[in-house]
Structures are given as structure tokens and as C-alpha cells.
Image 1 (cartoon, rainbow, N blue to C red):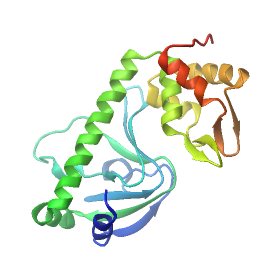
Image 2: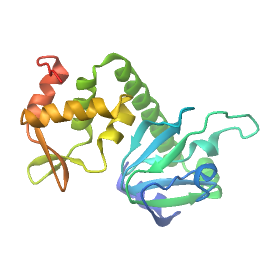
Image 3: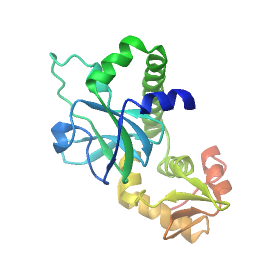
Image 4: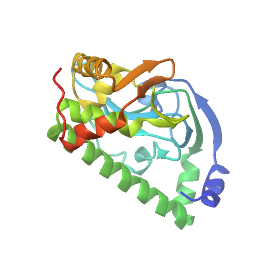
Length: 220
């Protein structure tokens, strides 16, 4: 997304802050309705709750991602039995736009339409890849891939933000948190990573990449 377009888009919105755990869907939290958002800072997720009351995470949204617009594109006269929610996984800063702005941009701004279509394509592809890997990869491979994907460089090291608890990692991977805990314990014991106040520090990302390539096995 280019900066001139970003400046133009944000000028239509209202900058707002939400706490961790807030849902951006009215039917889930009673917080907002009829809005879409541009995420400026923080992490949100697309989630649903299973019949057993378990949360499934389909997709993480990072800064510069347009979110919450699907409901504005859907035919509200048709039933939508499955509820999905966008949840702030960390404290977030967003630009909030109302439905009238959305309609105006759709009708009059080709740049917005292009960005919207690119966002839809990216979301669709990322969800497809995520579920393909969930079915095809081992728990170790999936966890290593996720850790490498979400880690951020800081002072010469890769750090997985501390909001990615074992339970959170398990929700995305579709596995049990006990499985994640056992794999992580083995990796820490082997010296591949450790935890401190910043989060999970990937001490040996090269070894994690070896697991992705199938060149190494982990018995946990």
C-alpha cells in the first residue's frame, strides 16, 4: 500500500484505540457496528467459536491491513449461520470508517477498489495456505513455521511477541496446547530458543528452518 493512498484513506477515518480482547463485531461484543477499519498498530485475528466453545483462529491481521469490511459487502437479506469475529489480540490502534465512507470510496475511488480487491485476494490465499498446512504438516513443522512467520527482528535477534502464548499458538495450529508445550519444552532444552520478558527468543532460527526442510526431527 503506497503512502499517498494511505494518507488519503486515513483522512476519511477516525483514529481509535481498543483494548486486547475487544471484538470489532457488534453481535459479539456490542462495541461497534457498521464500520470497517485500517489497522495501524497491533495484531487482530479472524476467529470463530466451535460448538464445544473452543476458539479457532483462521488468520492474523497486522498493521496496514484493511479489516472488517466483509459484512459491508454481503447480502444481509440472506442467512449467514456461521459467525466470525475480528478480535484485537493486543491493544490496537485503528482508523475507523463508517458505511457511508465505504459506499463513497467504492463508487468514486479506483485506488480503494484496487486495494480492497488485493486485500480480499491476500486474505483468501492466506486462509487456504493455512488450512492446507494444518492438514499436511506435522505439529513440529507447523509450530516452527508459525514461530518464524510471526517473529520480529529486534536488536539482532528474532522475537516472537509475548501475546503468542502456547494456548494462542495451539488455536492457530489446530492442536492441543499440551502438544505445543511439549514441543517448546524440548526446543528450549535443546537450546533453540528461550523465553524472557519480551517473548520467545529464537536463538537458533537456522535449526527451525531445518525442521521445515525435513532435514531434522524432534522427539518430544
